[in-house]
Each structure stands twice: as structure tokens, then as C-alpha cells.
Amino acid sequence: MDEEISTLLCSIFGHEVKVKTSTPTGGGCINQTSTLQLTNGKRVFLKYNSHPPPNFFAAEARGLKLLAKTVKGPRIPKPLALQDSAKPTFLILEYIDEASPGKDFSTRFAQSLAELHRTTQDNFGLDHDNYIGSTPQKNMLETNGIAFFRDQRLRPQQELARKSLPHSTDKSLSKLCDKLENYLDISGEKPALQHGDLWSGNYFPDEDQVPCIFDPAVYFGLREADLAMTELFGRLPQNFYDAYHEAFPLNPGYEERKDLYNLYHLLNHLNLFGGSYLASVEQVLKKYH
Image 1 (cartoon, helix red, strand yellow):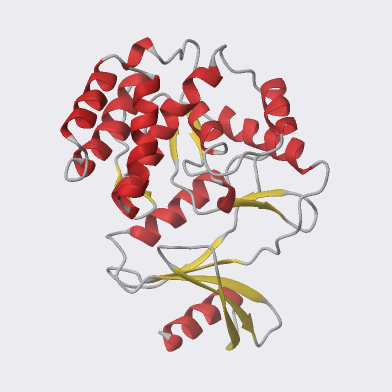
Image 2: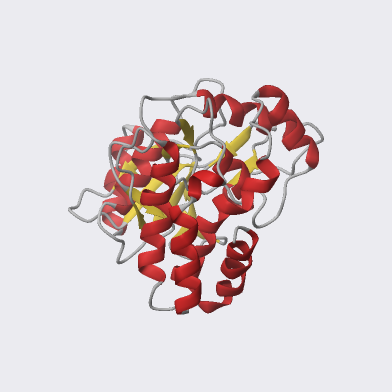
């Protein structure tokens, strides 16, 4: 792998470049990640997985490039090189220094996220499938946002979870899917480009307090899903939500809907990490029973 990395680094920088040091970084549970200090004084970020799912890193690179098209959206790390292989095991990315959030970061983040969500297309979904964590994420195009969330988000996770879902829980989830339109008010909502996995470990400010987002699960969907995910594992300060609502107001009732969006992620965590998430899944289902 070292020779392949050196070859790719030469193609990136146009001259011979070697890895001077490699420092493992934390935060990921699916891939190994490292910061590479190079002999030309620059740094790059390496993501590695010895046995990735099909098209795993290619889908990530494609998603990052799509997110970067929004001019006033968050900063996106540039994919620099993908291993030249039928099943790439590593991806080299632009390295971005992380800073501590300043007093204006939450507002800037909200405004840039609203700009990202204003990027739209005719249909919900995407022109290719990708991943949420290491779970395949289906993105078949749909004209109806509720049908998309039901058929491309909740039901595939339900199918995967059936081996660990009690029968009564599985039945409750099916009933919820059947009457999803009773709970989601999406009137006037267009398909919004979104990060797709916007928990607290997937964003930070750079040295200039510019909001950066990474590790995406990109698609065009209901934008409330991105906001809801920011509340699942550590909520942002309230001024973030206030600034977002000011920049791009939501339909009334978001607070009543947000747990429904996060059911997708709770089911995915149940599938990836086991039964400790079952109680959280059942709690959401009881709320919408």
C-alpha cells in the first residue's frame, strides 16, 4: 500500500513526495484514519479499510464532490486520490485543521447548511446508491418525499433488523410505515441536498471558523432529516436552530417530527452495533403509536 500511496501523492503534487510520518486519528468505528505528514511540508488525510463494501470509497468521494458544488455551503474536504483498484481500500483527502468553535460558529454553520439545503433537483433520492456508515443506502428516485423516506430509508433498515426485532416491534414499525403521511408535513418541501449523517462527529470549524462537514451519506431528501440528526447524539446550541429557522424556515411541527427522522439512524445503529439501540427504537415507535 505504501508504494501505491507514494505514486498517488506524486500524481497529486506533480513531483516525488514521500510520507514522512503517519499519525493515527480517532473518531471512526468503520475505517482506519491517519494524518500523513509529507516530505513537501504538506499534510493529507488517509482513510483505509482492508475489506470495504463495494464502491465504498468511490461513493464517499462522489458525495463529497456533490456537496462541494454549493457555493455558500459548508467547507468540504477535497477527495485527492482514490486507490486505482476494482475495490479501492483507501482514499486520500485534503487535510483540514480543526479549531474549537467560536461564539459565531453555530450561526455560520446554520446559514451554510441552509444554503446546502437550498440546492435541489426534481426528485428525492440520488442517481446512485451509497452508504450510511457501512450499511448500503438505497437512493432510488421518487417524486414523493414520504414514499422515499418510507421505501428507501425505513423499510430497508427494517428488513435488516428483522433478525433482532421482537415481533411486536416489527409489527409496530410496519404500522408506522403504512401511515407515515399522518406524521410528516412536507407541504412545499423540495428535495434538498443533504449531508445525510450529520451527527456531532462529522462537522467542525476550521481555523477561520468556517463550518466543515465530512463523512457524508449524501442524497436529496427532506431537509428536516439533517437537522434532526444534529440532535440525536449531542445537540448544537439553540442559536444554531434559531439561525437555521431564520435563514430557511421549516413547516410548523418540526419538534414533533424529528424523532421520526432519527428512527432511520437508530435502526441503522441497531443493525450495525447491536441490541443496545433496541430500547431507543421502541421508544420512538411508542411516541407515534
